[in-house]
Image (cartoon, helix red, strand yellow):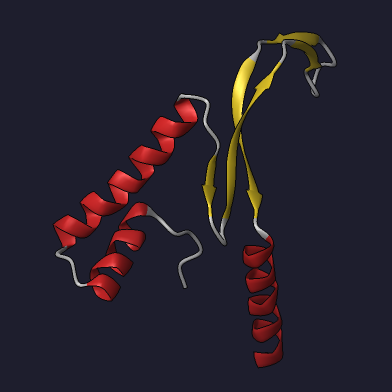
Amino acid sequence: MEKTTTRSTLSEAVFKNVGLSRNESSSLVDSVFTEILKSLISGKDVKISSFGTFVVRSKKERIGRNPKTGQEVPITARNVVTFRASNVLKSKVDSGNKLLKSET
């Protein structure tokens, strides 16, 4: 069983479930990711109902420490993307875990 979902597995799912051609399915998946990326780059949050929210956070410059040597190293300011799962997603994942445990 495959442990990672990729663009190609998402495209294949769209192909099987929606009925678009493989090329159209691949283009659709790429378009969705492109729109999410454009929004995040422009600083907008991306909220997908019943799934979760992607948020861009600005992190300030700070001093870090190399765990091997203990040497202090400056960490530059940067933007990071965080994801917060919706309660609907959390409960569906939890229900799936319960189903998997009961099957074993």
